Structures are given as C-alpha cells and as structure tokens.
Amino acid sequence: MFFCCTAGPVTDDSQDILPPNYEADAEDSKAQREDPPIVVPVSCRNTEEPNIKPSIEEAEVMSPLLAAGEKADLDAEKKDAQSPATAEDAADAKAAAERWQDSRHAQLIEESGQKQLEDVISSIGRRPSSTNVSLQAYVDDHATVYDMLEKLEPVDGWTFKKCEEGTDIYTKQAEGSALCMFKAVANLSAGGGGVRRLIVGLSDTANRPKWDEMCLEGRVVEQFAPFYKINYVKILAPAILSNRDMCALGRIRYEKDGGAMLALMSIEHPDAPAATGLVRCSMLYGGYIIRPTSDPDIFKVTWTGCVDPGGWLPTWVANLVCWKQGLTLCRFKKKVLETKS
Image 1 (tube, rainbow, N blue to C red):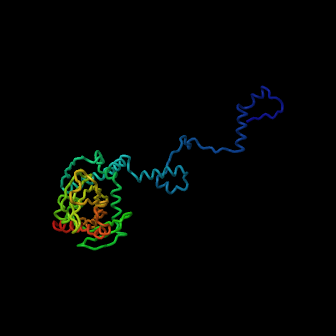
Image 2: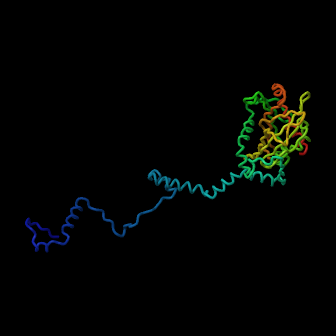
Image 3: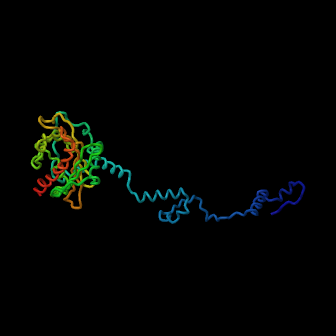
C-alpha cells in the first residue's frame, strides 16, 4: 500500500498512484489498532436467534442463574405439567358440586330399591322456595336451619342426665331463653338398610303411634320429597296436664361423611289447626343428626332440640321434665330397629 507524504496539494497524477478507498482503509486500520475485532468464520456463524429452552428438570438446577421472567415462565410450565385438569374438567366438577344433594338422594333411592315418596298436596299448595330449584339450591337457601341444628351436636356444655338402654340423655340451658334444650345420643343399627332406613323410619309420622306410646296421632299434612315434609302430631302429656299437639316442618340435608340431617321447626298450617281441648306446643328448633361410624351398619344418631310446651305450665316444671323428650330415640331404637333386626 502506498501513502502520500507531500505537504502540497495532491496532483491528478498522485491520485492515480493512491489505491482506491484509501481514506476508508486508513480509518479501518486505525480502528483495528485501537480495538481489533474478533473474526468469526462464516461457517461458524448462526444467522438465526437461538431459542433453546432448558427442560423443567434442568431449569431447577439452573434456577439461580435464570432471569426472573424466565423463572416464572418455567414455574408456570411445571405447574401445568403437574395439574392436567382442563377447563372442561373444572366445569364438570362445578356442575357436580351444584347438584351434589340431588345426586346423593338419587343414589340412596336406587340403593334402597324404594320409590320416591309421593307428594302430599295441601289446601295451600307447594311452598314457593321448593319450586323450580334443585335440592342443592334448596338446601343452600336454608343453610341457617342446618347450621343451628349442627351447633347442638357437640356435648361440650351439656349436663348428663342418665343413660336409658344405651341412649345417653343430656340437657342444657338454651341461649337467651329460660327454656332448657334436650339431647339424646345412641348408636343405632340400620339392619343392612343403610342411612336411608334410619331417615325413613325417623320421619315416618303416620306409623309413629305404633312404637311411641306418647304419640296419640300422626299424619302428613304436606309433602314434596326430597325438599320438605309437614307433619302433625298429638302428644300424650303427663297426668294433670293437657295433651299437646304440634305442626312441624322437616327438611333434609345429606352430609358428605355419609350421614344426614333432619331439621325440624314448628309452623302454622291451615290444614293442621290446634285441636279442641289440646294445647299447641312448639319445636323452636332441633331435629336428628345421623353420622356414620367405623362399622358401616352402625350410625350415631343425635335427637335434640328446644321445645316450648305452651299453655300455663311453669318454665321450671317444663325444664324439670325436659330430658324425657330424649326417650323418643330410646323407644325408636328398641321397638323399631332391634325388633326388626
């Protein structure tokens, strides 16, 4: 390469002597002296952007070196790999939860080989809350009724009164009331009929006088199974007291543990007015709680509630004999289950 060292102007002849692109070559030469570039052979160059992602296992080892964004992406990928549930699966699970009570009821009907209880239509027709809804929705709408019953289940704070033929009976002062509550607890054999047998037996008002000598009469006023049932009963009172009657609404809720709840509360119904000569008493709240045990044929049954006897009966007298209401469960166990087992 030739360079011009003259201080004067360059003549046309000298321009012919200089190589083409002299000035560009000079700048390149200067740049190479200051910071020589690294030359990569053409055969080794990758003209495309690399897009190689480590596997999930590799990422776990490399995680301290990964950028936060890349780490988050790989964590999400790992979560997806471990959770194969799809949107369709989630929708199916939601639909099943929304009709679990309905499915459980149908299952028990099928297993028992029994038919659905027939509707009993009263003069005022069906209760609006039970129309055009699933059993699950109906149960959810009346959750407070079952919650109140469930709060009576633990024995903490209850006073033990006696054990009558395998049935433990307790009493407790009702919160915010002068009345006492009662509770009876017993292990009952379903005789191979499962929880369905106990549900049907305990709610069979028409046949109750056959095994409960304190029940003078029982009949169904209105029924739309499995939503609700309205019963009317006449009750034999102790000597010197007037006999009682009651009209009560019962609702069922199946439990995920394999049991069930039958919640009861008194209501007034035009087809079940207070009978002449009787005193109307009221079940303020209560019912039956049925729980499975380690033995598939044995269930722990709790019969509990708070009853206002009505009439002129002093509260202290009512509380004195309150525990005797628990004997109903004892009679059911002895005269229905043990007789037929």
